[in-house]
Length: 248
Image (cartoon, rainbow, N blue to C red; front, side, top):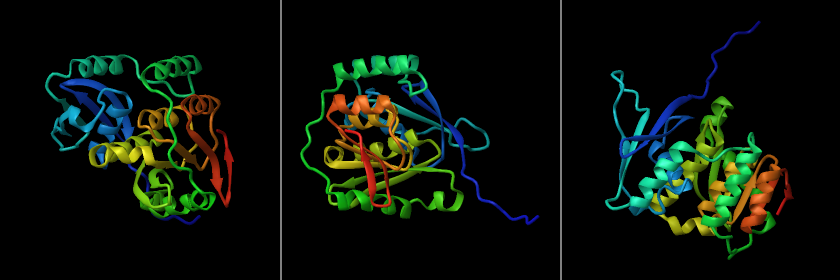
């Protein structure tokens, strides 16, 4: 039997706090944690824009120096945001493992998030180029095979930002957080590409961020298709080898 060293992906917990209150603990790959927290709070509607955050940074709570807690401070006077933070801590959106909860989340989204109006279509040749570009910008996946990737592309195929994480939803939060912090209006003109399947939580985050097109290497779930139809989003799966499935 041949023995050799093996690289493995790092997985550690990240606690996200808002004004001292714990909102969630997620298992993530360290790196771009501020983007992850910003994207998460944006996707959960705790904040609606970058200016809603007064500060967001790691806080040291471990004597060994592990940076696994990040705190966001809300801008003064955001009473509604504080309320949304409390609601998020009690009841986060469910994934496809809970159809009833997912259906409830769909009803909530219809109230707080109108359908998206498309402004640009994406040519097939651009779509078919996205998987290779995404893979080329996943160095940790290349070394470990253990991370998901998410990326934002312009409709001409230009890569805007790519992030990796052991959790597919975390990778999406990271790219959304980057956009919220740097160029929020860009989201409405981009394609979100993910290396995973397209589940409810992926389409949900894209809808909150007003991303009109989601493309995935894997399949879409039934609730993801329902949500994309409801939000007038283009949902594409099995995007590989010059082929794809158009669900909506």
